[in-house]
Image (tube, rainbow, N blue to C red; front, side):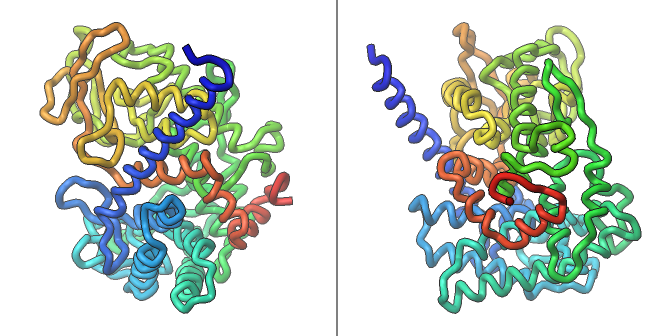
Length: 450
């Protein structure tokens, strides 16, 4: 039996190999589903799906990781990055129903063949922000003096400068979720704790159409703090809300006014939220199959069906794609491995345990992109996409598994594992002038920000 330092070293080496495998497989999605001519990335592997502008943003941040990890050649990453930047820099901004964008923003989904608006979707402020921050990361990484690298930086700045954040305030402080050419601005705004921190940071630092700090204060003034399982948490049910902005923002040790009042920071809050999800699974109030200390992760995800089915002899509501959350739901027994993995930097001691458990319980998808996007051990119907899982007590259970993979799952796996392993994205974005300026204008101070 190996004990002490040798056992610890062996476990660390094993974990590093496991994370390297997960990261590499997650990145393969972007290799397979990115159009080399436009840089556009399919939203999912489901046939007939459009591209997602947020997916393109994640891809732009994943390419530097892939180069440094040896999964992609530098010149190939540079070519894909330029393809995306050239497409969006030259894209139609007339606001036409079949166009690409308006006022510097872009439609949420674009057709894979034409690059024009798909599904009559909205002009999305948050998805534009996720696209732009990926561009800014690319500009940080491709810092050389070559003509191609200079073009990356110039086009990223040009695209960012055109985004009219003031227009998206529509006469108030908080920014709206979106706009449609048929009906105008959407009713809802970015209020309450959500994934919009990266949006407000970019809007505050914008070179042409910056908003005032009043916009950020409008957002934080609507925060809701809750005490859950003995932990005080700035609440948001789905885990992705506690993760997305953190991919690019190194918030440990930084405080704005809202966090200073609570004597904590957003990084610590995401850690608390991660533990809340785990504790919810341990308590398992609905007695779903498989929930335990090493099987949790509730977020916006694919699900088995929008239907009512029998579970423990009683009717229970199941969902397809929905924003699941803990502890207040909705919850139908669906676990999303990627949601736990993307919390790795916040709580590695529990996330690593979960990854090891899921490797044994449900394993990776045969598609080759890592874990299934989501699975459900409690769904009552047999499913051809399902797998047989062996529980800790030896009992075999049939699990529904998602037949698709999603770009917005794959990207956070690559990037948050990298932040845990090397802090690469965080370190590069610390030097990004708009990120520093946006955080300062939001009122952040402390640690690296000064």
